[in-house]
Amino acid sequence: MTSEEIQNVSNLISLHPPIIIGTLCIFMYIRGRFLEDMRKVNKNSTF
Image (cartoon, rainbow, N blue to C red; front, side, top):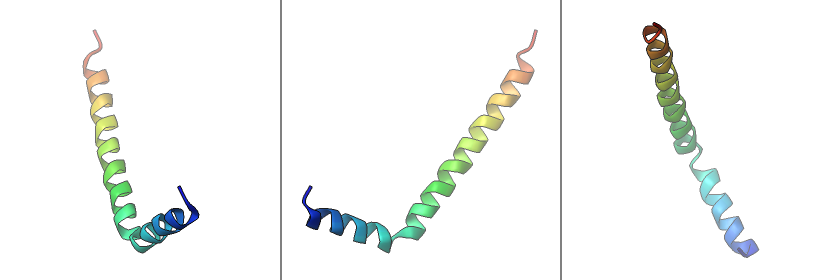
């Protein structure tokens, strides 16, 4: 990548922090639900 392309990408990222933050929040929520479900399955599957 040229320095101009890198500058363009960094400008685009800096213009959309709410989208990035929202995506991270959704990912962490889905991950938390998955881990919670896995804990429930592990508790119920003991013999």
